[in-house]
Length: 392
Ligand SMILES: Cc1ncc(COP(=O)(O)O)c(C=O)c1O
Image (cartoon, rainbow, N blue to C red; front, side):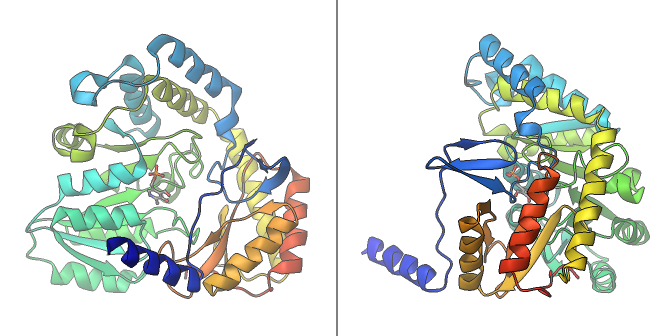
């Protein structure tokens, strides 16, 4: 009986072009994937700086495996903490200029654990409409009053702050660089509103940590508002090339999270080898200014080429939404690109809003100039010019 419900649900998803499957690749690199002996250019990974294959990081993980074995054998507060976990937390905090940082297994578990630990009944959370699903779930789990403002709409945010004057505490929660649209939250305006209305600010910088800002400290550094952010959450699974996440802020806040965030407390610690690899990655990011600048220049140049080719894109970043609209059409376009040797996954609801299915093209420092030329040629051939992003 239950099976029938799910079978018909799957059929309905298929009819709407929304059925998903995970393609298993046999190998590849930070710039390619290989499947059935065929190599395709990879233009939809979050490995923005190509660090997932950095030999220094791979060596640190191997050394960690030899020293600590495979699993950590327990949660962080029971028996799972090893020296690399502690060193990583210290190094992340130092990198960001924060008092402390706490490590989580993934970004999803960070957001779904941290928010309910910080906000609860009697509090008010105001969140951008295009925030990542893990932020939405964290907000729902918190049992705080939760309202979403239209994407980057500061006027509505201010009205909601005024309306929420009587809440015990007010939080503004936003992506720093929006994951599916590639545009930035106006953190300068958000922090000004937070000051004016005595609210706290939580930024999920999953896609900007390590890349944006002069020193790679992300969107708060880019906007010059680092001191005004109460919690900076970031992931280690994107530009850092590994897996895991952190929440950084004041020591008292981080100590509170260590005691209260359920996804931290009730979950097995990341393997120490992974923490050691992440540690190496953050150390590398601390001395990566030349590469970061080169990547930003590559990004700007790619946007110039897109404009010349007639694409109207709202994002200016290395996350480039080519919004096609219909889910089935997006899948069909992705297939045409696949046939040309380019892997660009179709992004459909619920990852994005209904009617805004897209190819989410991402750049990586691992690509060559020739790779970018190849993808530009294929886009001009198969993706109608004038498709717009939905960031604004
Ligand atoms: C903005 C944002 N936050 C959080 C996450 C979750 O991070 P993780 O993949 O480490 O679970 C993602 C991942 O896609 C993301 O885009």
